[in-house]
Image (cartoon, rainbow, N blue to C red; front, side, top):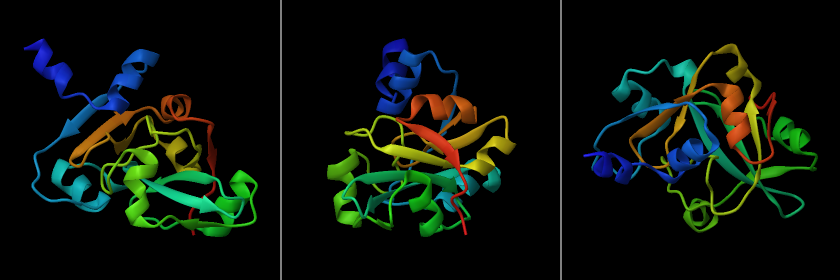
Length: 163
């Protein structure tokens, strides 16, 4: 039975295990290709303000940047660009998400992407002992301390990111 549980772990979970970072996870089965963060939070009975979504952008410098914000919020692109020291950022094309990150829409997390990208997490995460982020597949959420998330994501830091 332990083998079956290990098989259900996502890449993000394996990274957290390897780093010795404590977390829990919640998941549910879904047939849908994409579920937004609000639907996922409602389905799992999670408080919206503690559930964060992962957004991938392209900077004016040609580099990609990852921003993690509360599910009910929107990016402020000027604040995001300032937080990573570039002139501007824009969302990547959805068709490029999987090839770039290894994750699909609705299952994207800043932990364990194919490549390492500078990551910024909205400063509101610091208000909570624990936050929920995508576990690396649709219908899976990881719960962990915000500072542990900062430690697990590549070149991550807090910033004011929302409008």
